[in-house]
Structures are given as structure tokens and as C-alpha cells.
Length: 155
Image: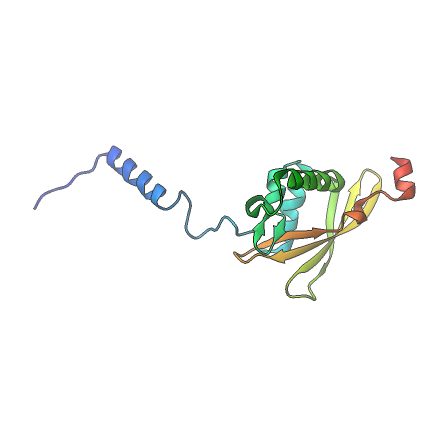
């Protein structure tokens, strides 16, 4: 019976080959899969907003097909304009989830109380489940975050 020995170099080459054959990522995790709960997806989105991380925002905003950062249903220019507007309007000093409407099984509407300086307002976010699993921000009532009459005069 012959004895076969492997050097560390052979093991490394074998490991790299296996990684390349698997596409470099675990088969159990889909790149389209989002956070497990609507609240987790929203918290991650708002963290990206406050960090001005437009790429991460694009990975947490989209529809049932997946994040806009991957599905690319709009031009890059349009996507970046929309993300920039969202980021500037939704940047806050603090926020707190106040209400979750789960009456429609196909979506959740989560209202978030937000604070910008002395200004306080509530913004409804519509969250939808993705086909690949997880949840994603689908719609934001940005008009609720816009300064109104007296707010605009103070700022």
C-alpha cells in the first residue's frame, strides 16, 4: 500500500481550488438575501443613512426581486440621485421605531419617530419580503420628513 503525503502548499492549492469552484462564498447564503426581520432591515438602512453609505443603502432598498444595488432597475445616475436625497432628508440625531402595521402579510409599514436637532417628525417606511429571503425597504414617505412652514423658517 502506498503512502500519500501532502505538503502545506498542496493543501493551500486544494483549498483555493475548492473556494474558486464554489464561487468564493458559502452556498447557504444568497447575495440577495436580506435581514431576517423588517425591523432589522430598517435599522441597518438608517445606520447606513447616518453613515452616508449610499452603497449600503442601495443594498437595503429595493423590492421583492432584491436590492437596487444588485437588481439595478434604474440608471446609476438616477439611483445615486434618489439615494442622496433619501440620505440628506433622513439623516437624524436619533430615531425610534414607534408603530408597526402588519395587517397586510405582503408588507409591513413601520413608522419611525426621528429627531433632527430640535425638529421631531414621524416617517412611515414600507418593508417588503424578498423572494430570496429577508426584508428590504421598499417605500419611504419622504414628504413626512420634509420641513413644514415654521420648521423651514427656523432652519
